[in-house]
Length: 291
Image (cartoon, rainbow, N blue to C red):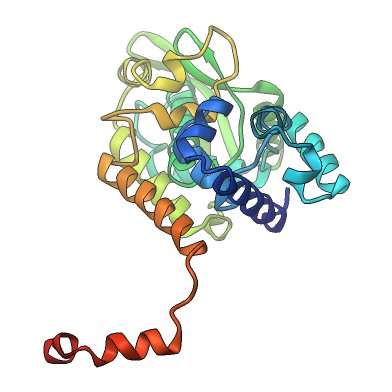
């Protein structure tokens, strides 16, 4: 969906929810997602899948057209988008790899397995904060941690090797064979937003010193990995169930987000302050003396 249609859909869901005197928590329970995801949905910062649309229609007891605003085209877009779930951004992936290698790739601990986990935390941490991953890679749960979907990851790597943007080679490391990558060109940081760069730098600052065993043990405590079946894709939505030290959103920030969403709901249904009412409050002696 385009950002415009996401915003339109978010407004429709908010209107239907408030009309029925429901909370975001009610919607979250009905869809099986976190309340913060509902907030992002209503703000137009998160996509609604076709399966979620089905659940929402049943919960609201409304036809699709009422939710989508009488637009068959929006339903086609929604179903088409849900089949892909999220579209890989190969240029961002290629430049994220180059950025990571530029910053920490020279360290002896940064082999292929560590690189996979750094990519995972960049994508999942950013999704927790913004509702959107950086590269939109799909990650699967394996015994030693998340791995990118090879049909997405390998073509980007092969193209980078072919164009000599990086080099890949084996190297002994503590008695084992380690696959390493070396960047041969600089990343184009203009492809990243300032917030994305902050996420990436935060991940590298926190985890870039860990070796394969350390980061493997660390990722095993993260909810998206722990809650996913072996070899299955890891759902980005699971980040909203994180706790310390994995959560990128503090409890205070979560409370502020909830409060802001409630205030936004209330403000939409309040009539604007009339000129007469404003004059009345401005004329109160207590307010004049407080200036």
